[in-house]
Image 1: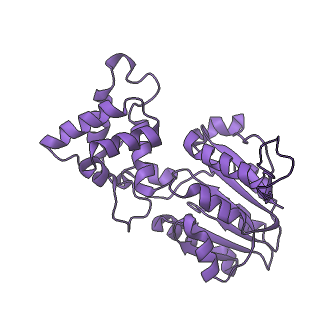
Image 2: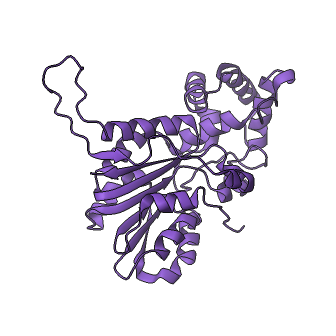
Length: 311
């Protein structure tokens, strides 16, 4: 299957990164190399791009698509949460720009065997890094009811988390839940018939929640964002695209803390916290997709872009 992925807010990301020809840039989620290709195009002879992805399939495709840029591009198979350690191993000090696209790629969603979609039958997988042990199958069939409820409620903001979990436990007591469509049907049947498809497919939030849990997408996001921002050179920028409120809240909070001076109560006569801001917000409010992009790329619907610049 062809690795097809339309990069979200491409122009806004490239403009926001303010690329220097001789700079060092990191695309933490290279995917189909849509954003990376545009970054590499703007690099001169001494510029460098580090393309990172935890999905080996994505990295292989990116390698082919970026091969024309030769030694300007380095590839790294890892979770971007390990970027600081990876940069140390690569003996790379400060960088001039970091891009993180937190969305699931079109390839992962459309490739049925990956198990991300509630519309196509496939084994319950949902791993972005297929070398890891934990899969959606493990969560659905082996986790306790209280753990599943917490995952659905915290990561999917699913109001019917308890009822869905009760139905999952009831089903798996009779037979193993093997496939995506089995799980989707359990979720569908947990909703009242009258409102089942009122707000789109009822399984959307459950699948989102389980995918986040499988890949630990929110686990250390806040701290890794801060660490990466502090690795930027003076004037360097970090751009992050989010696709749901949980991610956006984490990014917004991390960026706010990085761009805030003293946090002492206003009635304190002098600062005792010693906090000093390390960066400034490039955009106070998130950048949203244009009307044209919303029409032409349905997967940009919930996207938000936030950018910060190192002081």
